[in-house]
Each structure stands twice: as structure tokens, then as C-alpha cells.
Image (cartoon, rainbow, N blue to C red; front, side, top):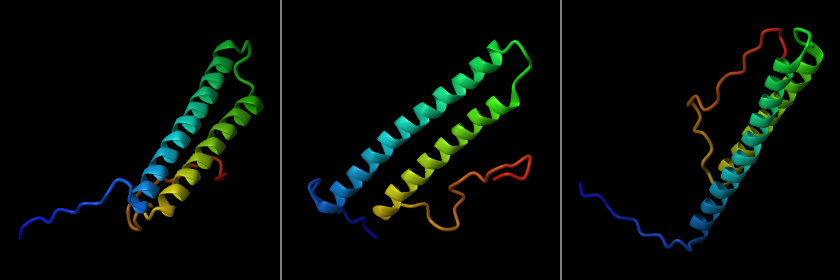
Length: 105
């Protein structure tokens, strides 16, 4: 069977919608993951500069902020992908399961 070529104009509304969604996901990922990296650098600096072993409350707060930002960006990207019919197909392992050491999700 011969392959059929499909020609869709770059100006087609579906192509524009998909391009917009991908551009938005790229912006979201750059902003969100940049913030996550900055928070992680702050936590590292705190641990490195701390005269005492570590202050669990401060470190816990930073780690919760990192987790919250990661969850926010994951949700934003998922919504954008879903809006153009490109969400992760059911049955595929699109997300890494959350690990919990103390019962918190």
C-alpha cells in the first residue's frame, strides 16, 4: 500500500491551534522548570551555608514549594495538550508516580 501524503496549510486553524499550544507549553515549561531549578539552588545554598545541620522546617517549606511548582506546571501542560487533543493516551505511563516517605502525597 502506498503512503498517502497529507497536505495541510500552515495557516489551517487546527495547525495554528496546535502551534499555539506547543508554544505555550514551551513557555510554561521554561518558566516553571526555571523556577523549580532556582528553588532547588536556594535549598542547596541553604544546606551548604547552614551553621547547624539543617533546619527541617525551612527545608520542608522549600521542598513543598518545589513540589507545588512541579505539580502546577504539569497540570498546565496537561491542560494545553488536552485542549488540542494531544493529552497522554490512556494506558501509557505518562507520569512518574509520586513517592511518599511519610504518607503525604
